[in-house]
Length: 232
Image 1 (tube, rainbow, N blue to C red):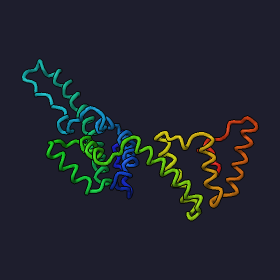
Image 2: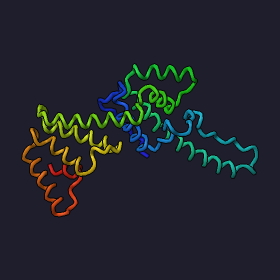
Image 3: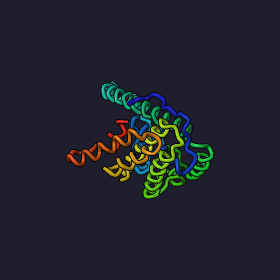
Image 4: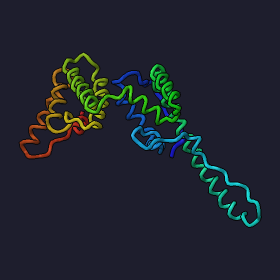
């Protein structure tokens, strides 16, 4: 697993609406580091990394124990190497969390954990989730509303086309992650083309509309929303 430090960028978790994006990034980075189970807020309670350090075997008291000691020492060194690697990766995640969460959110969460005598990253994620995470249905409704509002923005035309498309792709990926129906099927394609037709890309949208109609007439499976967007 990679032990390289994680990029932090400029994104900072400050409020409820930012939780879904931030949490997906957290999962992605932890999975790439092979330590998701150590910080998964829904997983088995994690122990502090220092308490999980391997114990060095005792020195042999007689020559008969020498060979066994050598084997135990080799195992200890291998375990220590694995433990140190995991500790480094966890420290990188700690650094990432500290860099991407607003201090005004971190401080109260950490104060609560100090009172509870807890110090794991998993415990911190749980505390942040309790304060910030919306319910599943409210998250889905929020993502859906953001996607629909962005389509409406295209119809108004007061936006740079490339900037609009970049943000659309981000919202599309988020909607796909939450399995939102608004991005699936022929209606999703039509909504996308209808959004672009008035201002941003009228000629292209009309051409694609004609292609969709022709596919239906010929009984050809039409392109998906993602495939249509790549034609642009």
